[in-house]
Amino acid sequence: MHTRYNPAGPIGQPLLRITLLELLVGTVLALLATGCGDSSSPSDPQPYPVVWSWTEPGAVTVSLRYLMPISAPDCNVDSVTVTGPGLASPRKLNCTGTKGVSFGGDVDVSPAPPALPAVYTFRATIDGKVANQTAEVDCYLSVPTGVAPAPGAAVSSPVTLRWTLGPGTGLEYSVSIFRGGVKQAEGVVTDQNSMSFTLAAGSYQWTVSAAPKGLYDGSSTRHCGAKWDDGSFTVN
Image 1 (cartoon, rainbow, N blue to C red):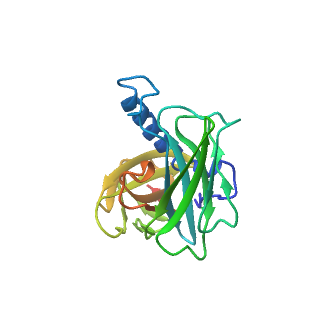
Image 2 (image 1 turned 90 degrees about the horizontal axis):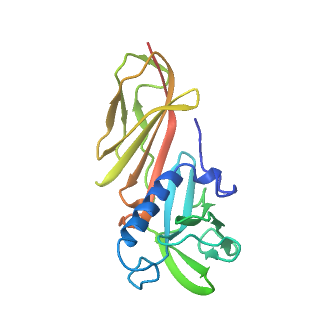
């Protein structure tokens, strides 16, 4: 399917892979924070940056995110710029105008990804106040290549999809199955290399991505993910 990152694009298209998950993360953080006290309480979660590498066949991208758990930014006034490896000049992040993932952007660092750790400095101007914070990419994850069914194979339902496992433990593998560009099924497993799906007859494409739990909110101790998207098969 080759639905790769488009680092040069606006905040919409390059972020389709993770926007929904990130927004859910932001929503959960906001709900937790608003359980008590008023929104200006010093104990409320403060805005913070998150970065990670994203590896696909032939491409490596660094994703830059600035999360605001409590309030949405004013895109006419607030701004976040980033400096770091792969950026020839300060990069102004795109403003979403929403809680959670409030600013974002992607940097294409292929074919020569920066040495690790790759540290990025975020300069955020929110409500007239300036804050400088850093976040780093500390790993590159190998692509979880699909191994079964063989490309273009004819199979019977239920279909078992298999892929290679990444290094270490604690990796979540997200599988999506498409037919004619429309998602038909999906699932997530941890530290497993297979999933089975009951599907109607027809031709399908599938993808599998790997990422440590907590990657998108910065709570993971590893900051890297990877995706493979070249699977295809036909159900008899």
